[in-house]
Length: 412
Image (cartoon, one colour):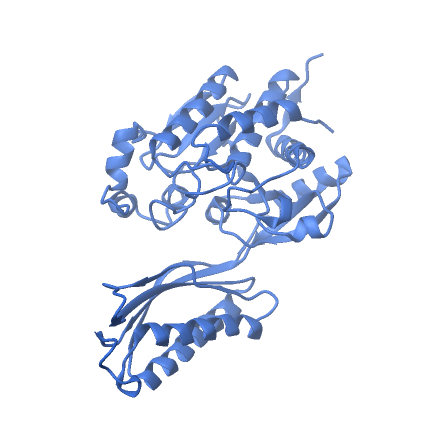
């Protein structure tokens, strides 16, 4: 079994981490920002050094291609993203991109040709921190989201995706989509399971279902000092009860059911005014589609009961739905065979986070390789991984991709 150059990969990760470096050791490269552009340009430079050709599509997805011996074959694709959270870590996303590059570098070192071409993809706006929804680069590529809808999305400063693409020079001309033989994505787990079980590799069998809801609760703004408590329609106090109910819901769907309220805003808030309008978000996750549908039904019922009891108006709007997604059996088997042959400690796992691979899985055969992250911490400047895990995960990626792409020859 082949193995990659772990020191070279680690050095590349550390060099990329310097772009958008934060004071507490993390990274900030918001999608289509100057920092994201600089990260892409460094990656492109390395790809050209590795003899790859580059192309960009209309939503800014960047592709680096290594030719295969069969000019008519669809590519075996690897990749992830270079954009981060505002206070993100050094490995979320970037590991998958640079692991794909290291696969190509290793094959170059060994003078190994593949029958099918290889491509490394950098997907636009995976994080959704600047533009929402998340993962719309891969969504547009796979036809899940319309290009015009994505281009019209605006950030908090009113800058549209179309404007950001033009400004950064990433409004490309490569046609959207196209044939893909298979897609493999390496990623940090972003959770504690692998570390807790002392496993170096997670063989990912699929992604769990995700539903995002936007909740609007309207009461009546009034004076904090003159309005008796029984006569108030306090939207925030109602929301507090709603959030408690959402947290309690997770216990009814344990252990797979997860609930999160990640954003909350009080409209025209003032110290001495009873909140009249509150908006908040709900993130629901479960391994099964039927269970997450039941979770949403319960959210709606429980929140409506609280609103009715307090004289509040409630509106719940779906924001984004990602069904549970099984990965391709043959691609998962290729990952499993690679890790078995390498002898690395491993286990099967379901992805708890959304990834571009979830979109690709509805488009072409797909699989993922997870490695542990220290303390299960991600979306945090303190996010960390062990260099040996980085190497082992990429060893698995290399051998799984090579099996799929077809090894032609090896030089001495």
